[in-house]
Image (cartoon, rainbow, N blue to C red; front, side, top):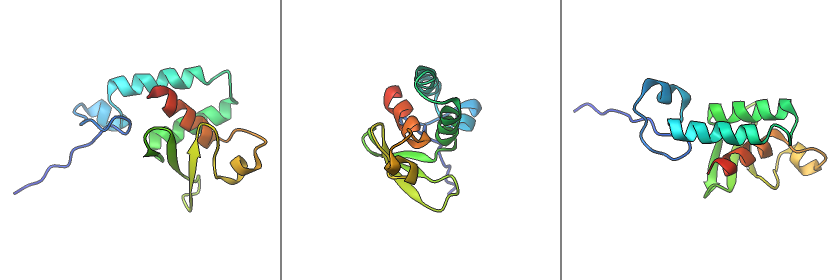
Amino acid sequence: MATTEQTRCRHCHRILRSARSIALGYGPKCHGKIRKATAAQTGAHKPAAIEKARELIELGAITPLRGRRIFTVISSDGTSSYKTAAQGCTCPAGLKGRHVCYHRVAAQILTLAA
C-alpha cells in the first residue's frame, strides 16, 4: 500500500494542490495575506529587517507556538531557537531592546496576516 504525503499551507494548514502553492509553501489566499502584511510593515522597519523576515517566513523557519501570537524561530545559523511575538523576542538583539529584530518583524507580519 503506497502512502502519499500531502503538503500543507504553513499558515492555515490546508492541503496544497497546485505546484506553485506547494513550491511557495502557502495557498494563494494566505500568500496574498502575507504579502499585504509585509507591505504594511515597509514604513515601520528597516528594509533589511523586512527582507530577512520575509526570508524567514518563506523558509518556514518561524512556526506558531500558541495560536498565532507566539512563535518559535530558528536562528540564522540554525543552532538555536527563540520564542518571539510582535511585542518581544528572546534572541540576543531582542533582549537588548535597542532595535526591533527581524524575528519580531516576521511575527508582526504573520500576526497581521491572521
